[in-house]
Image (tube, rainbow, N blue to C red; front, side, top):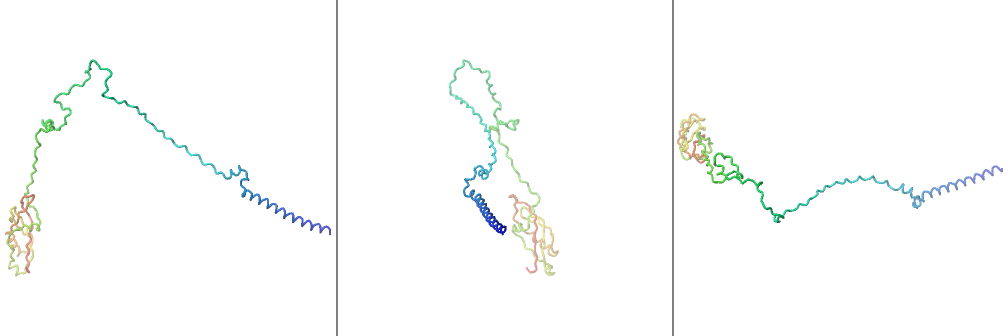
Length: 238
């Protein structure tokens, strides 16, 4: 009976001691955690600075100093031409003077290309003969100038109208007769050549156009021969 009772007393004492020890350890650990947070100045300064202080920045490169070269300005004494000389020489040395210029030399005169003609100096002085006058002559036109039929039609002055041949009208022949014409400087018909058209109508067209007169065609202000085409239309309805 004594053994059982002593064992129960030991159990109760050991469990109470464990709770007390755990509570005390918890309080100690909590104090160690809360004290640095509430009172940071209580910590050693060396350890605090080692943990908080940031590492120093890397050293900067030394700025490159550009050496400026200053040119020494030497003072130049201004010569006063009106200052009287300190001493007056008794004789003047003329041995080093330049010889006088030769009269009639071309020193300082402009160089003229045609000096061998004898008029170079006169031309430079403005007393020479004037330059020759160049006359431009217009080339004479020998061949007739080709002019369109529309342009030459506006220069027509007079002439007979073509007569419709009775045989062509009876045969119901119609169409256009194209003629090649050479008109002189005076506006008269020089030559007629049939290019195309019905055979029954060609002679009537040539006979009528041969009487036509034109205003002279001017080229560069002068009358000239003209080559053109003339079309004569024959229509049964007209």
